Length: 89
Image (cartoon, rainbow, N blue to C red; front, side, top):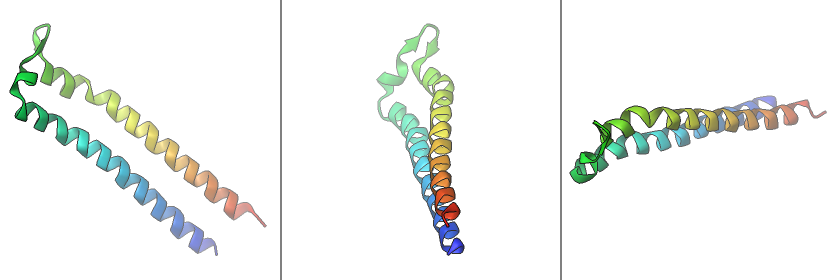
């Protein structure tokens, strides 16, 4: 029975990983495509720096932190549920 629970936990970890990877990929690939498709958006400037550089260079880190935080929280919840199932007599 423990193997079944463990296999389920591993599958859940994998699915959580793929969801978060998909969100990251959409953002990481979507922004350059947006700037390429709409050059007027990329032409805006924030002070002396183009908007595309600000968003891709500086805006990416908070997004990565949020995705990482969400991943850790999701995995910890899954592991807590697994621990409850295994600890039950």
